[in-house]
Image (tube, rainbow, N blue to C red; front, side, top):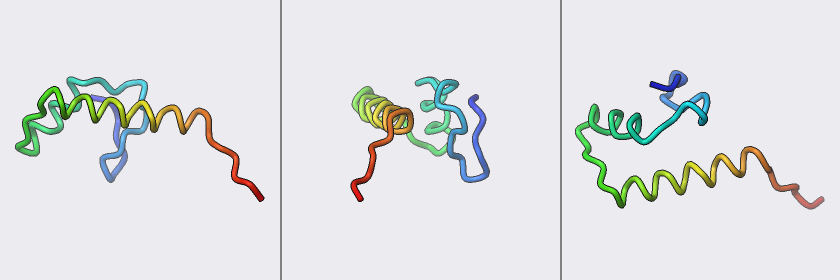
Length: 59
């Protein structure tokens, strides 16, 4: 499992994978469908892209 902080947020997105997401959901009593995984992966990619390429705010 990828390391998480005290609030269960991933500390390093590069160590995350779909199996980890499914396992974390299973522990909460949730079964993730392929549609769930599509959304999770899209959101993860958007977050990763924003973190690597932050937008500049206009002054």
